[in-house]
View 1 (cartoon, rainbow, N blue to C red):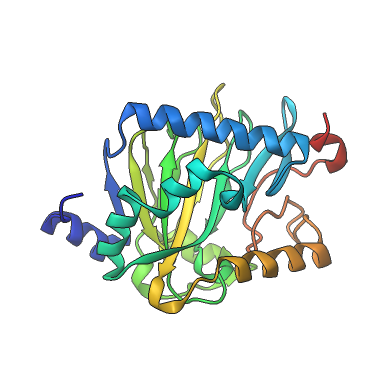
View 2 (tube, rainbow, N blue to C red; view 1 turned 90 degrees about the horizontal axis):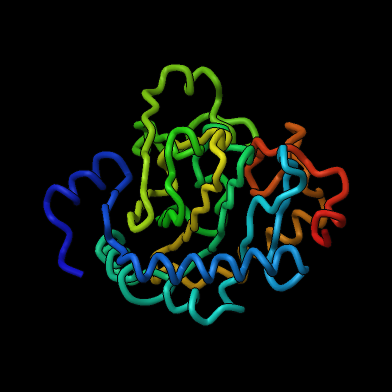
Length: 264
């Protein structure tokens, strides 16, 4: 990894996002796809990790897998070492540690996310950097991310993690389409949203979140806290949608019998 250019640093500092096109070789992307499919098979077989389901036009489908890193050596190596670690060290100004990891599958008809920031959902540390690794084309039709300026405003007014509508209506939302091989970094205050997958193919993306190493390794604490909250409150938010985050920002339709979805 060569040092980030002045233009890349300006992009990061001014927008809270950094897009590196073609950063991963096709062979690496193919390997990551195979590993992702292994994790998805775990979801349907009740294997390790946290797995969340949603109702789609094709029936119940897995919407998200997380907390899988300790159970997959290949993914663990990719998440913790090499290219990602080198870029993150430049962005943080010190080494990074993994805070959480997830796969959003967004199968055809899969729900998007209301406008939100990650910071309200990521407890224990005030500032994080997430890395988006698309393994299918992320397009407007398939439900790519949209970002808006505002990462420098701190935590925006919100309801259960969803940015308040008056702020959303004034913001300049722009799509960030990405291809397999691209890598997108964004900080935990960057406002973002996404739409329903209107295409006939999946839009599978890995989201990997990190904090500065000097603040400690908090991954286990994060997942213990999340599991406890979900056990107490369930997986349906006040909005009526599936709740797959501490934020109630996911727009997916609940599955009436999640146990059936996991064993179909």
